[in-house]
Length: 427
Image (cartoon, rainbow, N blue to C red; front, side, top):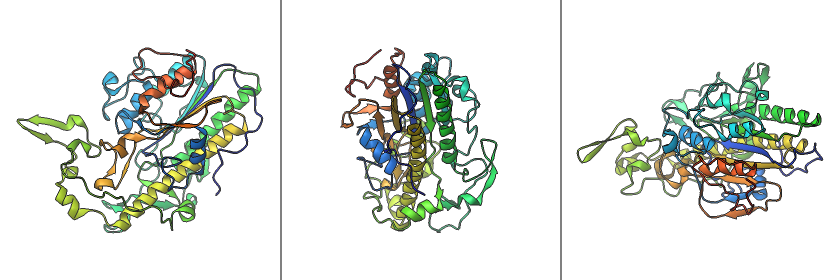
């Protein structure tokens, strides 16, 4: 299949809402900067084009390198210490700390959303208070967070020692979409929407159609569409034809240069560790929970993965990034079809980064650069593409988008990036 081109000529569309810009906010999951000018070893034609069209931030960082606290922070514009969400212990209280999506809705925006935005599923809490009534029931309501599919899928079992086999399950698989047919999250019989992100893209396109229909009737209110993709969160599985087309014989993806932890590595640099699991006991610190990660360095040296395993897993991650690219492209193409990017601020980012075998780590939750640094792209009408080297935080997204909309919230902990974008604040 051919990926949709984000650079396709934009057709004359319905008149954009006056004054205030439309907003399209797109989040990936576990995506390290791995496209465009960040790194171009993966097949990402849509993201590469969006990178060239945008202001790209070379040093953007999350507040916490873990899904729930990071998303809770940047969606509310408040630091983890403000909302008291550091791991998976809960979510922000929506009345006390509303999301910036709710602020936009209350200011007259048509607020729409789909996919993985907050970490938690369902229609309660932040889901219920952030969107306009036209958004309807949040879709998909539920899905498998670990496997990135809709309810029915599980990874195939495997024999230990098989390529990609970890603890008896394949962490990287290639599936044929025609293998499954079921009533998907939209309540219709479907083939090919087994992959969560394909359903997310499908629903996002429907919501853009809703905006276009409203504009065709003369409505002028701006829209704010938020789209949360699951890729490239593991477990990594992709359409078989995508793998065959781009990664079966890919040679540019090699094992990491630094495959074992450095001497004297700090314990909190290990992945998926919660700082509150450390309990001082005399002069020692006793760690509870993920003890397998606390192996001595010589044990890591004895048990490091073979290069063919590392390359296979890194290719599988890359294939998921390509799958993300394809689904994002279909959403941008739908927006362009209706002229809905002509007056739109588009923000693309990820909740945190990811280690791919560097220092023997596969995951997030640690303090290495690869786990804390994220891609951040911002495009808007009249905004000249360029690279920004100064460090910024995901915490800055909420005040930036509110600033674009002529709004402000003094309770936010981040700072608007409009001046760094070369724009004067309208608020």
